[in-house]
Image (cartoon, rainbow, N blue to C red; front, top):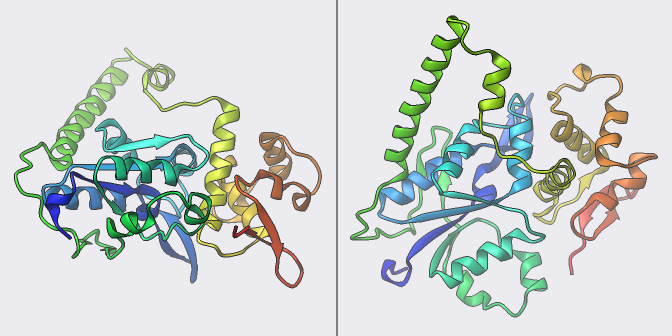
Length: 295
């Protein structure tokens, strides 16, 4: 792979951030923003300009579940957004959007996704070219060491790196926290005012609900596997209600609260399929699993 043939690196942010986490001896799919941050730093250390893309819903889900053992440090996402390295998309098929972006801007793609459904739905794209520009051979250790043996050095970049920008943002955040603590001690500012003054990424309630729901479905089903209806319901509840991993700690009315947020009625088996962003089918001996329809 010749560095001179490409102008930047385009990162499948969700694919990089998602990883397997052991919870109580069971493998669970987690979201660690630290992985994305580490990979971007590694690419820039080799001289590359980097742009990452991710669904709005994935960010909203993570920001509402910061206490979950399945979610890492969401501040990493926020720093990457502020620095312009991470862009949030609110489109029906986010993958093909940023794949097209990579092709149009001579970008190297970093993703382990094989884009099976996109190949079938968007057969007019030059998938041989896309495959030739995709790097799937990368690993990120638990210590956040990044290994990308197929990524060549990009000579003569001479641009400010995310690492240096992150250090500056970290210093500003520390100063802001110190200033806030001083003002609070002197009773010049209260928690309510701080909350109102803190800038946040927002969306309308309805659109946020849809984005989070679609992100959960894609997180669980996009690899082509089937997921039990109970697990899907469980993850949707965590995402929308912000409850913890242990169901014993959930409020008694969690089901009613979830249905109110989603705007549905009846039993979960009657409405879960209708929430999916793509066509799904019931599979399994008892037809109690959902999976994306392979077109």
